[in-house]
Length: 126
Image (tube, rainbow, N blue to C red; front, side, top):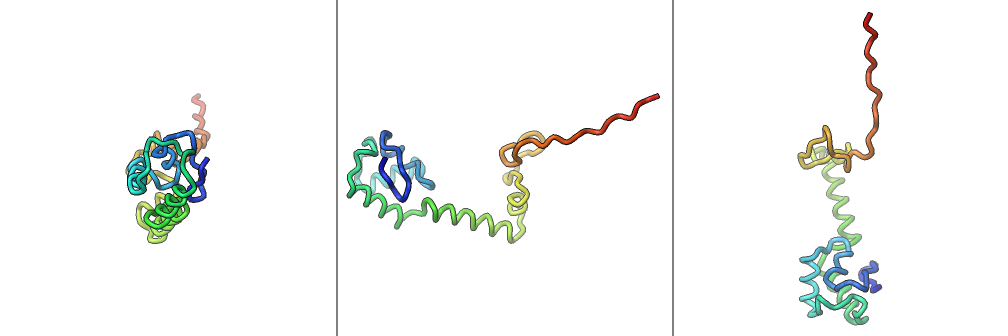
Protein backbone atom coordinates (compact mmCIF):
# COMPACT_ATOMS: atom_id res chain seq x y z
CA UNK A 1 0.00 0.00 0.00
CA UNK A 2 1.65 3.23 -1.12
CA UNK A 3 1.38 6.17 1.27
CA UNK A 4 0.31 9.48 -0.32
CA UNK A 5 -0.17 12.60 1.86
CA UNK A 6 -0.30 10.46 5.01
CA UNK A 7 -2.98 8.18 3.53
CA UNK A 8 -2.61 4.55 2.53
CA UNK A 9 -4.08 4.07 -0.93
CA UNK A 10 -5.02 0.56 -2.10
CA UNK A 11 -2.13 -0.92 -4.09
CA UNK A 12 -4.10 -3.53 -6.00
CA UNK A 13 -6.40 -1.01 -7.73
CA UNK A 14 -5.78 1.17 -10.78
CA UNK A 15 -3.96 4.41 -9.98
CA UNK A 16 -6.90 6.58 -11.11
CA UNK A 17 -9.19 4.75 -8.67
CA UNK A 18 -6.67 4.54 -5.82
CA UNK A 19 -6.20 8.31 -5.73
CA UNK A 20 -9.92 8.77 -5.05
CA UNK A 21 -9.35 7.29 -1.58
CA UNK A 22 -7.75 10.63 -0.64
CA UNK A 23 -10.28 13.13 0.78
CA UNK A 24 -10.93 15.86 -1.78
CA UNK A 25 -9.89 13.89 -4.86
CA UNK A 26 -12.56 12.51 -7.15
CA UNK A 27 -12.33 10.74 -10.50
CA UNK A 28 -11.85 13.89 -12.60
CA UNK A 29 -9.16 15.37 -10.33
CA UNK A 30 -7.35 12.02 -10.16
CA UNK A 31 -7.24 11.88 -13.99
CA UNK A 32 -5.97 15.48 -14.11
CA UNK A 33 -3.14 14.80 -11.64
CA UNK A 34 -2.12 11.62 -13.48
CA UNK A 35 -1.97 13.49 -16.80
CA UNK A 36 0.11 16.29 -15.23
CA UNK A 37 2.64 13.77 -13.96
CA UNK A 38 2.59 11.76 -17.18
CA UNK A 39 1.71 8.49 -15.44
CA UNK A 40 -0.32 5.60 -16.84
CA UNK A 41 -3.87 5.70 -15.35
CA UNK A 42 -4.26 1.92 -15.83
CA UNK A 43 -1.11 1.14 -13.83
CA UNK A 44 -1.61 -0.42 -10.40
CA UNK A 45 -0.80 1.81 -7.43
CA UNK A 46 1.68 -0.67 -5.91
CA UNK A 47 3.86 -0.30 -9.05
CA UNK A 48 4.62 3.37 -8.23
CA UNK A 49 8.28 4.12 -7.59
CA UNK A 50 9.45 6.24 -4.65
CA UNK A 51 10.22 9.12 -7.05
CA UNK A 52 6.70 9.01 -8.51
CA UNK A 53 5.15 8.94 -5.04
CA UNK A 54 7.19 11.95 -3.96
CA UNK A 55 6.15 13.85 -7.15
CA UNK A 56 2.54 12.94 -6.43
CA UNK A 57 2.85 14.20 -2.83
CA UNK A 58 4.48 17.42 -3.99
CA UNK A 59 1.87 18.25 -6.63
CA UNK A 60 -1.08 17.44 -4.33
CA UNK A 61 0.27 19.55 -1.47
CA UNK A 62 1.18 22.58 -3.58
CA UNK A 63 -1.58 22.83 -6.19
CA UNK A 64 -4.65 21.31 -4.52
CA UNK A 65 -6.50 21.60 -1.22
CA UNK A 66 -6.91 18.02 0.06
CA UNK A 67 -7.14 15.98 3.27
CA UNK A 68 -6.67 17.96 6.54
CA UNK A 69 -6.63 21.41 4.97
CA UNK A 70 -9.85 20.73 3.07
CA UNK A 71 -11.58 19.26 6.13
CA UNK A 72 -10.51 22.33 8.15
CA UNK A 73 -11.78 24.65 5.41
CA UNK A 74 -15.19 22.91 5.30
CA UNK A 75 -15.51 23.05 9.11
CA UNK A 76 -14.62 26.76 9.11
CA UNK A 77 -17.28 27.41 6.46
CA UNK A 78 -19.89 25.63 8.60
CA UNK A 79 -18.80 27.56 11.73
CA UNK A 80 -19.10 30.82 9.78
CA UNK A 81 -22.65 29.94 8.67
CA UNK A 82 -23.60 29.13 12.26
CA UNK A 83 -22.06 32.32 13.64
CA UNK A 84 -23.85 34.65 11.21
CA UNK A 85 -27.17 32.97 12.04
CA UNK A 86 -28.19 32.37 8.45
CA UNK A 87 -30.79 29.75 7.52
CA UNK A 88 -28.20 27.12 6.60
CA UNK A 89 -26.35 27.83 9.85
CA UNK A 90 -29.45 27.31 11.97
CA UNK A 91 -30.17 24.03 10.14
CA UNK A 92 -26.59 22.88 10.81
CA UNK A 93 -26.96 23.81 14.47
CA UNK A 94 -30.21 21.89 14.88
CA UNK A 95 -29.01 18.88 12.85
CA UNK A 96 -31.66 19.10 10.15
CA UNK A 97 -31.28 18.93 6.34
CA UNK A 98 -30.27 22.24 4.80
CA UNK A 99 -31.18 22.00 1.15
CA UNK A 100 -34.94 21.98 1.14
CA UNK A 101 -35.59 18.29 1.77
CA UNK A 102 -38.76 17.33 3.61
CA UNK A 103 -38.40 16.34 7.25
CA UNK A 104 -41.83 15.01 8.09
CA UNK A 105 -41.24 11.44 6.96
CA UNK A 106 -37.62 11.11 5.83
CA UNK A 107 -34.36 12.91 6.77
CA UNK A 108 -33.20 10.05 9.01
CA UNK A 109 -29.58 10.55 7.95
CA UNK A 110 -29.50 14.06 9.42
CA UNK A 111 -31.94 13.57 12.30
CA UNK A 112 -30.43 10.31 13.56
CA UNK A 113 -32.14 7.25 14.99
CA UNK A 114 -35.90 7.56 15.49
CA UNK A 115 -36.91 8.76 18.96
CA UNK A 116 -40.30 7.28 19.79
CA UNK A 117 -42.67 9.60 21.61
CA UNK A 118 -45.55 8.17 23.63
CA UNK A 119 -48.95 9.01 22.18
CA UNK A 120 -51.93 10.39 24.08
CA UNK A 121 -54.37 7.83 25.46
CA UNK A 122 -58.02 8.28 24.57
CA UNK A 123 -60.35 9.03 27.46
CA UNK A 124 -62.75 6.15 28.14
CA UNK A 125 -66.23 6.83 26.79
CA UNK A 126 -69.06 6.00 29.04
